[in-house]
Amino acid sequence: MKTALYASAAVIALAAFGAAPAFAQSRDTIQIAGSSTVLPFASIVAEEFGAAFPEFKTPVVGSGGTGGGLKQFCEGVGDNTIDIANASRAIKDSEREACTAAGVTDIREIQFGYDGIVFASAASGPDFALTPLQVYKAIAAKVPVDGALVDNPYKKWSDIDPSLPDQDIALAIPGTNHGTREVFQLEVVDAGAEEAGLPEGLTEEEHTAALTTFRQDVVVEISGDYTETLARLTSNPNTVGVFGLSFYDQNKDTLKVATVNGVVPSNESVAAGEYPVSRPLFFYVKGQHIGTIPGIEEYVQFFLSESAAGGSLEAAGLIPQPEEKTAEVLAAFEAGAQ
Image (cartoon, rainbow, N blue to C red):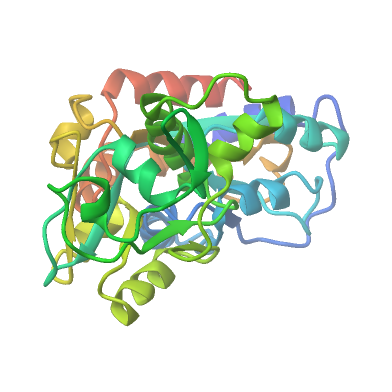
């Protein structure tokens, strides 16, 4: 098996360096950074990879958010730049352009499973049954009332809808460096604003502001990882935090999760397409580092293996993708597809 992997690695290395000269290796450890959602999965794989392949050093996995990880990834080619960026959303065209400008021209996308985005609060608090409309009305700095945008008047969740708890509104959401924030924006805030019905005649700037300007009195934006969000809930039990489903699953003893549109978030409801706030998870490999930084291809192969994706990662909360999709992703990676 390892012989086949090494042979495959050699083929990829030749393809990767066919258009550009290789850099001199002075680092022998895979360096990874990025998404807080992907962090626990990548950390598990790194440890298991180090144990399964003693000839390679255990990869070093950091956080920094999807945007931060891809920014590091796109800084250039060489042993002073990271090899892999974890991401809870697909890479943007603007990020690809930044990569290209810095000489990162071989970017290989690895989709490895799915996760949901959930609203969770203190286990001792009331139950929440939320909709995107209600979240938009809670979070937006200005909301439509009688055909006009006005300063947000809602103080308690029950002010928005009598079915919601009679509790002060407080939200902890991911900062703009997180891929979770972008999915939250699109699937929850934008969807809620559309249902609310923004006034006609808004300029493009006014329309954008209505979607992206959040209240400063009740909303805290978290630039760190989910442990920081959890700490916010601990310090203020009224807070509703936005988490990845996998992180919530690991903290069920202290948190309770809200339904969204009447659906309980779970591995099953996400896999079935029933839970409305979900997304695929990725990591991006710098093809120009394959064959120079040891173990990159073996790491990808191991990450996508049944023992990882269908074993320890699923146990940690990853929602597996169909085997056919994984085979397609692996074949594309080995062919050098971008």
